Image 1 (cartoon, rainbow, N blue to C red):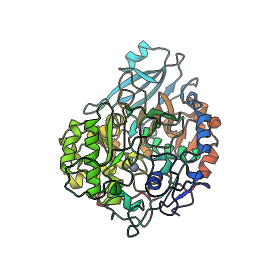
Image 2 (image 1 turned 90 degrees about the horizontal axis):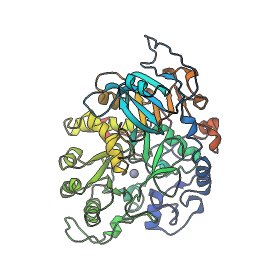
Image 3 (image 1 turned 180 degrees about the horizontal axis):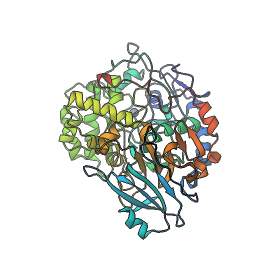
Image 4 (image 1 turned 45 degrees about the horizontal axis):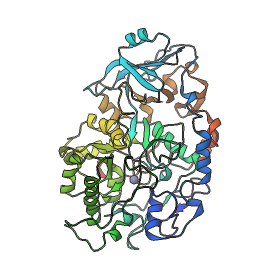
Length: 527
Ligand SMILES: [Zn+2]
């Protein structure tokens, strides 16, 4: 089943057949289509629905407390030498409210050395030798994951949690030359994709959980629930910890906005890109640009970079960039525009992707994002695997596994304007962490080969949120971690949500699953 299995009340999204709100959120595919092509308003689909907003307000702050690991007895079990978990995390209680988290830390060097972080108030207070930190904070709780790797939590710089619960349309082929074609905005000769919105909190929680269990601790994109991982998008919604303007398609139906122009074109832009209302002019700006391979896509890139050059003073990101022409790629570095790469979605829809090594040569930062479930990766680890395959097949392995890790951590944070808040293991930054299985001395290659089964634990703002059940002594975990999903536990207090654990599982029985990627879109010939 492709559609209809998600949750009752969700609007089936056939952009042409069911034009949606022009007055709701301006930053998703449906609304962009409606704003450009129709004026009809559907109350049920007008942006974040009342049900969703109420849910978010109700849970704000409620799920912070259960993240702390406190007050449980210490007991250590040895890992089984035959088939047991590769690593175990030893937990000991503390009295000061601080936590020491130890493992092999990914600090950006070639490898990863055994070390620890002292976490206080959700932030990394110090990085150092485990024994030295224990000496300096003797009353801190300790979570020691031995030789497991500890990375900054992954930053997925591009996802659409409000449109990411369903499976790819089985009719999808990489035949498009501009996103307007699959959106149904470019005429009947193009096959429009079907997709379903995921606005209900119980759906968005599931989508965020899918990413969390794969090591993502910050998501950029519209749609959020409070208290699980951290979201960057609309500043007026308390579910978004970080603010960024996800004005998805700032040129609307770009082919109409640029009507009459042909490539090459050297004249001025006929229109300016739109910003979301109520955003301060210095908030990070993260639109989809040049999502396609045709002249319209190239013009979007040209005009967007002209806009950036004329309006300095904010963080600029460019999502996709498939159709950027060589001259535009040359400008990315000088203009400090971070390219957000979504190779699986690009290949599934357009059969091409942006030349990432060329963008890097031109000085551009490159981040990475999964896009949505309908053409992109189900989680960021899958996206890294796709990226690695593309790099090997097209670019002769010019991207290292460490390059990919940087895209998925500090460059993702930079894309969202939060590089001084998260994305690295450094004092002063949030203790957003992913602990994953150590299989070799190359932590970056290990990460790129990881699946959620290799993710041993995730921490958000210093609090344990999820982990592998067999990596922890159950008695060492707080009560809130009693929720089980597969081989993982989830530390969440459902009291703040309009659903409980059982209802979460029931409501998402037909959604993209948390672990299986069987029905994920193809990364082309590069899988
Ligand atoms: Zn997207």
